[in-house]
Image 1 (tube, one colour):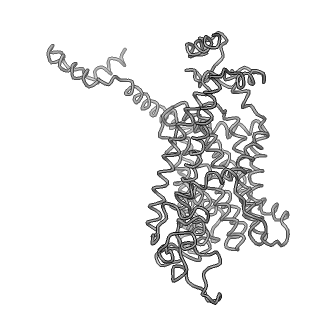
Image 2 (cartoon, rainbow, N blue to C red; image 1 turned 90 degrees about the vertical axis):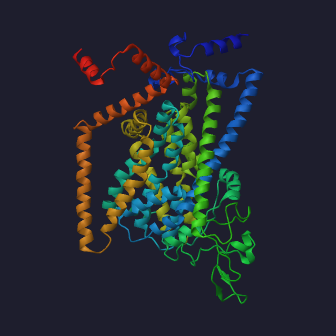
Image 3 (cartoon, rainbow, N blue to C red; image 1 turned 120 degrees about the horizontal axis):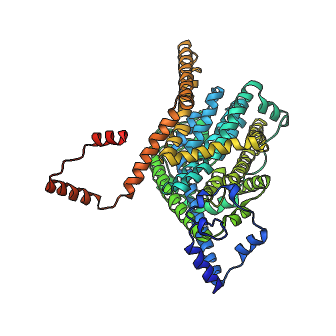
Length: 595
């Protein structure tokens, strides 16, 4: 009886202002208004009672909720898997052609960003870079800058996930801040370590001293258990051929018709792994010496979409497919993955909100207030298990959006994810010949460790990326279209612009060099002018005011009754009937200003 009365009281008290204790509970109307410093401390006894002391009916609800959470989480991860695989299919040929050793540091950095955005996986990009360095196609120094860019590009996925909260302003602000804290750390780290590396070769020299003089390829590839659970179902739908990007990066082939990848050819027209996928060492005649070209006779050929040895050929694989066919299939799967991701995100957030409804923020704060360095270890362990920092941060972003995880706690988990993602590159280096691949993988590790040492231990430095992320979150309050502008500008427009400018200096022509210098100087002047106008010229205030007015008008329009057109028609009819003159907006405005 007491439990029912307390439950009734909780439902009847939607605000902390009306609650006798003054505490905020999850789901209150003023839940988002409470600041961290306002939250009182709870004991672990209170946390245990909240978690473990329930009626049989409540335990049944919790069990069903956990089953639903696992269901939505599994398909959320499947959506991410499909999104990443489809991106590899869509951008595989383009990403492969971007890699090369004839790049300056800026171009190398932009290549890392663009390739990671295209294939939606910093782990895959880093593994490709490590393999190319091991094969001698890319130098260690170029590989270091590409790895820095891959670190920036990896945060695009959880930023897309944050946009799933567009329907709720409070959740969008928190989720976008939680997603972009990853961006801010990576941008700030690159902003410091990139010029340091160019001037002093800090990472190159440090890792050079750590690697042995010579080493043969050894070790095995390893996939995390989560990958093994999700990948089989994903492989039934689509499976990307990573060899396309690697081969194109070495300059040994292309995606044109009649090349080594297209059109797809299955021996005898029979679709299966053995009849469609060529052996690793290539095809040979019966004598075992004479090579057979892919796509001829008994030698099969696959393109951007390939078959899996265990699962067979996926649903979107087709014999005789061209590059265009595979890319259309990739686009369809990308859309499918996005739909699955958004639906599961909404389902996941809804179920978790129902389960946390009425829980005091003191309890939530205590339960999630883990030591920052322990949180880093947790983030590292999770990322090693799932083999993707994108999956780790994307899975945590909804928790930040709903308010169950604070930005201060998301930050160290993100840093741990950055450390965990280097594990993939280290494994890739162990199966590559030579020491150069291991050196690049170690550079990736020490880049992240150095960034953490700069931005986390000192509280003042820690607040810089946190405050920048909060500012970006607040920008979504002013304009909900800001996340789209941010994604396009940060992960496409700026990298492409800087890549194009830096490429002008690599053409070996004085004309291109002069043009590049002039355009670079012009770009710097534009940036300085914009910064001056933004901070000193009132541009920030005027734009903020303009967007706030636009947002208020939108809210006012949404608040109008559905029969507003009918009311306007009735007013016009009444005015015609009474003979009253129409109001002049300019006269009314003058009167209001005089008043």
